Length: 202
Image 1 (cartoon, one colour):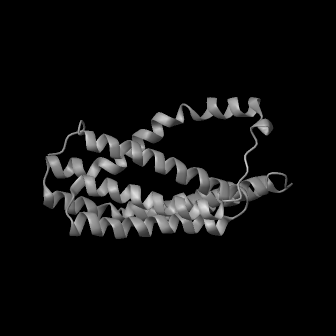
Image 2 (tube, helix red, strand yellow):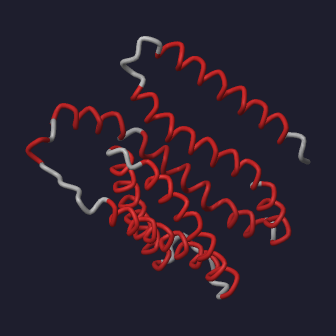
């Protein structure tokens, strides 16, 4: 029976948070040092591993939400190991840490933690809420209907990650305002077109 107070689920949750943080830490480091191809493939590897593990634990073993959490943990572990292998030359010097910049980052990021946590919770628990309150058939319809916005979301995520690097590289350029405006316009025109067409699926 599903319960948010299930001890096993709580353990899975904390383990999932830990491996997700490790994966984000090392993948972000790879992107920061210019290893963008390795960074991009780590995301692909995580998705492929998640699909395979979902098929194993949800379809074959039929473990339900436990299987889903195990699949998430396993996919992050695969991606983390891949990132750690290519970031094994990482060196951290605590003496070189700029305390002023560190405090600014903390002040900026702290308010974002509850927001990101709620988004993660909603995105990963919606199907089980639908299954619990409406039923299996409605959950199937919801799963199919969510594929289109999921594809759009994947595109947006990939674009934003690539855009962060590009925006930083063009920051000192004299034509950066024109470049930013052009990319922004094209980006939102594309999103508007995709959203308008996807709204026709009923």
